[in-house]
Image (cartoon, rainbow, N blue to C red; front, side, top):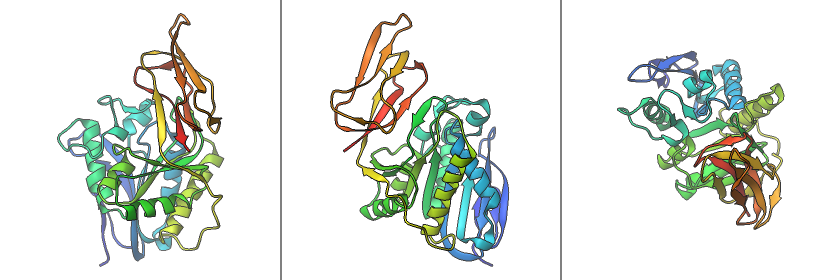
Length: 316
Protein backbone atom coordinates (compact mmCIF):
# COMPACT_ATOMS: atom_id res chain seq x y z
CA UNK A 1 0.00 0.00 0.00
CA UNK A 2 1.30 3.46 -0.87
CA UNK A 3 1.34 6.53 1.31
CA UNK A 4 -2.00 7.59 2.79
CA UNK A 5 -3.11 11.22 2.70
CA UNK A 6 -5.20 12.07 5.77
CA UNK A 7 -6.76 15.30 7.05
CA UNK A 8 -9.05 14.84 10.02
CA UNK A 9 -11.63 12.16 9.18
CA UNK A 10 -10.82 12.27 5.44
CA UNK A 11 -8.33 9.80 3.91
CA UNK A 12 -7.24 9.22 0.31
CA UNK A 13 -5.23 6.15 -0.61
CA UNK A 14 -2.64 6.17 -3.36
CA UNK A 15 -4.40 6.81 -6.68
CA UNK A 16 -7.55 8.19 -4.99
CA UNK A 17 -9.29 11.54 -4.89
CA UNK A 18 -11.57 12.17 -1.90
CA UNK A 19 -13.74 15.19 -1.14
CA UNK A 20 -15.74 15.96 1.98
CA UNK A 21 -16.48 18.18 4.94
CA UNK A 22 -13.92 17.92 7.72
CA UNK A 23 -15.02 18.90 11.22
CA UNK A 24 -12.78 21.09 13.34
CA UNK A 25 -12.37 19.58 16.85
CA UNK A 26 -14.71 21.30 19.26
CA UNK A 27 -17.63 21.28 16.82
CA UNK A 28 -19.58 24.09 15.17
CA UNK A 29 -17.56 24.37 11.96
CA UNK A 30 -16.61 22.17 9.02
CA UNK A 31 -14.16 22.83 6.19
CA UNK A 32 -14.64 21.67 2.57
CA UNK A 33 -11.48 19.72 1.75
CA UNK A 34 -10.25 17.86 -1.33
CA UNK A 35 -7.45 15.29 -1.12
CA UNK A 36 -5.71 14.14 -4.31
CA UNK A 37 -3.26 11.30 -3.71
CA UNK A 38 -1.29 10.73 -6.89
CA UNK A 39 -0.36 7.46 -8.53
CA UNK A 40 3.36 8.18 -8.07
CA UNK A 41 5.26 9.46 -5.00
CA UNK A 42 6.32 13.07 -4.88
CA UNK A 43 5.90 16.30 -2.96
CA UNK A 44 2.84 17.28 -0.93
CA UNK A 45 1.31 20.66 -1.78
CA UNK A 46 -1.20 22.49 0.43
CA UNK A 47 -3.51 24.93 -1.38
CA UNK A 48 -5.69 27.07 0.90
CA UNK A 49 -8.25 29.66 -0.16
CA UNK A 50 -10.83 31.83 1.54
CA UNK A 51 -8.88 32.56 4.71
CA UNK A 52 -10.71 35.84 4.18
CA UNK A 53 -14.26 35.01 3.12
CA UNK A 54 -14.77 37.82 0.59
CA UNK A 55 -11.72 37.04 -1.58
CA UNK A 56 -13.62 35.20 -4.27
CA UNK A 57 -11.16 34.76 -7.14
CA UNK A 58 -8.89 32.48 -5.12
CA UNK A 59 -11.82 30.55 -3.67
CA UNK A 60 -13.31 29.85 -7.10
CA UNK A 61 -9.89 28.94 -8.49
CA UNK A 62 -9.44 26.41 -5.68
CA UNK A 63 -12.95 25.00 -6.23
CA UNK A 64 -12.32 24.52 -9.95
CA UNK A 65 -8.83 23.10 -9.42
CA UNK A 66 -10.17 20.65 -6.83
CA UNK A 67 -12.86 19.54 -9.29
CA UNK A 68 -10.50 19.04 -12.24
CA UNK A 69 -7.33 17.64 -10.65
CA UNK A 70 -7.10 13.84 -10.95
CA UNK A 71 -4.76 11.34 -9.23
CA UNK A 72 -3.67 9.88 -12.59
CA UNK A 73 -1.88 13.13 -13.49
CA UNK A 74 -0.42 13.82 -10.05
CA UNK A 75 3.01 12.84 -8.82
CA UNK A 76 2.75 13.39 -5.08
CA UNK A 77 -0.19 14.70 -3.11
CA UNK A 78 -2.36 17.81 -3.07
CA UNK A 79 -4.55 19.11 -0.22
CA UNK A 80 -7.06 21.81 -1.15
CA UNK A 81 -9.29 23.84 1.21
CA UNK A 82 -12.08 25.83 -0.42
CA UNK A 83 -12.80 27.96 1.58
CA UNK A 84 -10.89 27.89 4.87
CA UNK A 85 -13.21 30.40 6.58
CA UNK A 86 -16.74 29.25 5.65
CA UNK A 87 -18.58 31.41 8.20
CA UNK A 88 -17.06 34.57 6.73
CA UNK A 89 -17.70 33.31 3.20
CA UNK A 90 -21.40 32.55 3.64
CA UNK A 91 -22.13 35.59 5.79
CA UNK A 92 -20.19 37.86 3.39
CA UNK A 93 -17.99 39.38 6.08
CA UNK A 94 -14.61 41.02 5.39
CA UNK A 95 -11.43 39.98 7.21
CA UNK A 96 -12.93 38.30 10.27
CA UNK A 97 -14.75 35.12 11.21
CA UNK A 98 -18.15 36.29 12.51
CA UNK A 99 -18.18 33.31 14.86
CA UNK A 100 -15.75 35.05 17.24
CA UNK A 101 -14.71 38.29 15.55
CA UNK A 102 -11.11 37.14 14.94
CA UNK A 103 -9.04 37.38 11.77
CA UNK A 104 -7.92 33.88 10.73
CA UNK A 105 -4.97 35.40 8.88
CA UNK A 106 -3.70 36.80 12.19
CA UNK A 107 -4.42 33.67 14.28
CA UNK A 108 -1.83 31.09 13.19
CA UNK A 109 -0.53 28.78 14.61
CA UNK A 110 -3.73 28.82 16.65
CA UNK A 111 -4.83 27.11 19.85
CA UNK A 112 -6.64 23.73 20.10
CA UNK A 113 -8.49 25.01 23.18
CA UNK A 114 -9.12 28.54 21.96
CA UNK A 115 -11.92 30.30 20.14
CA UNK A 116 -13.41 29.01 16.91
CA UNK A 117 -10.88 30.85 14.73
CA UNK A 118 -7.96 29.79 16.90
CA UNK A 119 -9.09 26.16 16.67
CA UNK A 120 -9.40 26.46 12.89
CA UNK A 121 -5.88 27.89 12.67
CA UNK A 122 -4.46 25.12 14.87
CA UNK A 123 -6.21 22.41 12.83
CA UNK A 124 -4.90 23.80 9.52
CA UNK A 125 -1.39 24.21 10.93
CA UNK A 126 -1.10 20.76 12.47
CA UNK A 127 -3.23 18.67 10.11
CA UNK A 128 -2.27 20.31 6.82
CA UNK A 129 0.79 22.57 6.98
CA UNK A 130 2.84 20.08 8.96
CA UNK A 131 2.52 17.36 6.31
CA UNK A 132 3.17 19.66 3.34
CA UNK A 133 6.39 20.24 1.42
CA UNK A 134 5.08 23.56 0.10
CA UNK A 135 2.13 25.80 1.01
CA UNK A 136 0.31 28.32 -1.16
CA UNK A 137 -2.39 30.55 0.30
CA UNK A 138 -4.78 32.12 -2.23
CA UNK A 139 -5.92 35.64 -1.39
CA UNK A 140 -7.30 38.63 -3.28
CA UNK A 141 -8.74 42.05 -2.69
CA UNK A 142 -11.53 41.69 -0.14
CA UNK A 143 -14.91 43.39 -0.44
CA UNK A 144 -13.36 46.83 0.15
CA UNK A 145 -9.85 46.45 -1.35
CA UNK A 146 -8.30 47.20 -4.73
CA UNK A 147 -4.91 45.77 -5.66
CA UNK A 148 -2.47 44.68 -8.32
CA UNK A 149 -1.65 40.97 -8.56
CA UNK A 150 1.36 39.99 -6.47
CA UNK A 151 2.98 37.22 -4.44
CA UNK A 152 4.56 37.39 -0.99
CA UNK A 153 7.13 35.16 0.67
CA UNK A 154 8.27 35.23 4.29
CA UNK A 155 11.72 35.97 5.67
CA UNK A 156 10.91 34.02 8.86
CA UNK A 157 12.45 30.79 7.58
CA UNK A 158 15.94 29.62 6.62
CA UNK A 159 17.79 31.18 3.67
CA UNK A 160 17.30 27.87 1.83
CA UNK A 161 13.53 27.91 2.31
CA UNK A 162 13.36 31.59 1.39
CA UNK A 163 15.15 30.80 -1.85
CA UNK A 164 12.71 27.94 -2.58
CA UNK A 165 9.74 30.23 -1.91
CA UNK A 166 11.11 33.05 -4.06
CA UNK A 167 11.87 30.73 -6.97
CA UNK A 168 8.31 29.36 -6.79
CA UNK A 169 6.90 32.91 -6.81
CA UNK A 170 8.97 33.67 -9.92
CA UNK A 171 7.04 30.97 -11.79
CA UNK A 172 3.77 32.90 -11.51
CA UNK A 173 2.14 35.39 -13.86
CA UNK A 174 1.65 38.05 -11.13
CA UNK A 175 2.92 41.60 -11.60
CA UNK A 176 4.91 41.93 -8.39
CA UNK A 177 6.76 39.88 -5.76
CA UNK A 178 7.84 41.13 -2.36
CA UNK A 179 9.26 39.86 0.90
CA UNK A 180 7.39 40.13 4.20
CA UNK A 181 8.36 40.02 7.86
CA UNK A 182 4.83 39.03 8.90
CA UNK A 183 4.44 35.69 10.70
CA UNK A 184 0.74 35.59 11.63
CA UNK A 185 -0.59 34.46 8.26
CA UNK A 186 -0.57 30.95 6.91
CA UNK A 187 2.53 31.45 4.75
CA UNK A 188 4.33 32.97 7.74
CA UNK A 189 3.19 30.09 9.91
CA UNK A 190 4.56 27.59 7.39
CA UNK A 191 7.86 29.48 7.26
CA UNK A 192 8.22 29.31 11.04
CA UNK A 193 7.53 25.57 10.85
CA UNK A 194 10.31 25.09 8.30
CA UNK A 195 8.10 24.71 5.23
CA UNK A 196 8.48 27.01 2.21
CA UNK A 197 5.42 28.77 0.89
CA UNK A 198 3.89 31.87 -0.67
CA UNK A 199 0.75 33.97 -0.54
CA UNK A 200 -0.80 35.09 -3.83
CA UNK A 201 -3.10 38.10 -4.25
CA UNK A 202 -5.29 38.31 -7.35
CA UNK A 203 -8.69 39.96 -7.90
CA UNK A 204 -10.38 42.62 -5.79
CA UNK A 205 -13.51 44.40 -4.54
CA UNK A 206 -15.35 41.17 -3.82
CA UNK A 207 -15.73 40.53 -7.55
CA UNK A 208 -14.57 37.70 -9.78
CA UNK A 209 -14.52 36.96 -13.48
CA UNK A 210 -13.85 33.72 -15.38
CA UNK A 211 -10.65 35.26 -16.77
CA UNK A 212 -9.31 36.14 -13.31
CA UNK A 213 -10.08 32.61 -12.12
CA UNK A 214 -8.39 31.17 -15.22
CA UNK A 215 -5.30 33.29 -14.50
CA UNK A 216 -5.25 32.06 -10.91
CA UNK A 217 -5.63 28.45 -12.04
CA UNK A 218 -2.76 28.92 -14.46
CA UNK A 219 -0.62 30.13 -11.56
CA UNK A 220 -1.51 26.95 -9.64
CA UNK A 221 -0.66 24.75 -12.62
CA UNK A 222 2.65 26.56 -13.09
CA UNK A 223 3.42 26.05 -9.41
CA UNK A 224 2.54 22.34 -9.56
CA UNK A 225 4.67 21.85 -12.68
CA UNK A 226 7.54 23.66 -10.97
CA UNK A 227 7.24 21.34 -7.94
CA UNK A 228 7.07 18.24 -10.17
CA UNK A 229 3.50 17.45 -9.11
CA UNK A 230 2.15 17.92 -12.63
CA UNK A 231 4.06 16.87 -15.75
CA UNK A 232 5.64 19.31 -18.18
CA UNK A 233 7.68 22.47 -17.92
CA UNK A 234 6.60 26.08 -17.62
CA UNK A 235 6.91 28.60 -20.39
CA UNK A 236 8.97 31.60 -19.26
CA UNK A 237 7.11 33.80 -16.78
CA UNK A 238 6.67 37.51 -17.57
CA UNK A 239 9.36 38.46 -15.00
CA UNK A 240 7.41 39.99 -12.09
CA UNK A 241 8.95 43.12 -10.58
CA UNK A 242 10.63 42.21 -7.28
CA UNK A 243 10.68 44.45 -4.23
CA UNK A 244 11.78 44.19 -0.64
CA UNK A 245 9.38 44.96 2.18
CA UNK A 246 6.07 46.84 2.10
CA UNK A 247 4.76 49.59 4.35
CA UNK A 248 1.13 49.76 5.51
CA UNK A 249 -0.54 53.05 6.45
CA UNK A 250 -3.38 52.66 8.96
CA UNK A 251 -6.29 54.81 10.08
CA UNK A 252 -5.61 56.58 13.40
CA UNK A 253 -9.38 56.72 14.08
CA UNK A 254 -12.75 55.94 12.51
CA UNK A 255 -13.62 58.07 9.51
CA UNK A 256 -14.30 58.48 5.80
CA UNK A 257 -11.41 57.54 3.50
CA UNK A 258 -10.60 59.36 0.24
CA UNK A 259 -7.71 57.63 -1.61
CA UNK A 260 -5.57 59.66 -4.01
CA UNK A 261 -3.32 57.01 -5.59
CA UNK A 262 -4.11 53.76 -7.40
CA UNK A 263 -2.45 50.33 -7.31
CA UNK A 264 0.54 50.31 -9.65
CA UNK A 265 1.24 54.05 -9.25
CA UNK A 266 4.85 55.02 -8.55
CA UNK A 267 4.98 57.25 -5.50
CA UNK A 268 7.55 59.67 -4.13
CA UNK A 269 8.47 60.65 -0.55
CA UNK A 270 6.01 63.25 0.73
CA UNK A 271 3.30 62.34 -1.79
CA UNK A 272 -0.22 62.39 -0.38
CA UNK A 273 -1.88 59.00 -0.80
CA UNK A 274 -5.25 59.91 0.64
CA UNK A 275 -7.22 61.77 3.30
CA UNK A 276 -9.27 60.66 6.27
CA UNK A 277 -12.17 62.94 7.18
CA UNK A 278 -15.01 62.81 9.70
CA UNK A 279 -18.69 62.69 8.79
CA UNK A 280 -18.77 66.50 8.71
CA UNK A 281 -15.95 66.65 6.16
CA UNK A 282 -13.30 67.82 8.62
CA UNK A 283 -9.76 66.58 7.92
CA UNK A 284 -8.58 64.00 10.45
CA UNK A 285 -5.45 62.56 8.84
CA UNK A 286 -3.34 62.78 5.71
CA UNK A 287 -1.75 59.54 4.51
CA UNK A 288 1.68 60.53 3.18
CA UNK A 289 4.36 58.31 1.66
CA UNK A 290 7.62 58.32 3.61
CA UNK A 291 9.72 56.51 0.99
CA UNK A 292 9.82 56.02 -2.75
CA UNK A 293 7.95 52.96 -3.97
CA UNK A 294 4.89 51.61 -5.73
CA UNK A 295 1.33 51.49 -4.39
CA UNK A 296 0.38 47.86 -3.91
CA UNK A 297 -3.20 48.11 -2.67
CA UNK A 298 -5.69 50.59 -1.32
CA UNK A 299 -8.96 50.51 0.59
CA UNK A 300 -11.87 51.67 -1.57
CA UNK A 301 -14.68 51.70 1.00
CA UNK A 302 -15.77 55.11 2.25
CA UNK A 303 -15.92 53.90 5.85
CA UNK A 304 -12.77 52.78 7.66
CA UNK A 305 -12.15 51.81 11.26
CA UNK A 306 -9.41 52.88 13.65
CA UNK A 307 -6.34 50.71 13.13
CA UNK A 308 -7.47 49.29 9.79
CA UNK A 309 -5.26 49.52 6.67
CA UNK A 310 -5.71 52.45 4.31
CA UNK A 311 -3.12 51.54 1.70
CA UNK A 312 0.21 49.79 1.29
CA UNK A 313 3.23 50.47 -0.86
CA UNK A 314 6.33 48.41 -1.60
CA UNK A 315 9.77 49.91 -1.11
CA UNK A 316 12.47 50.20 -3.73
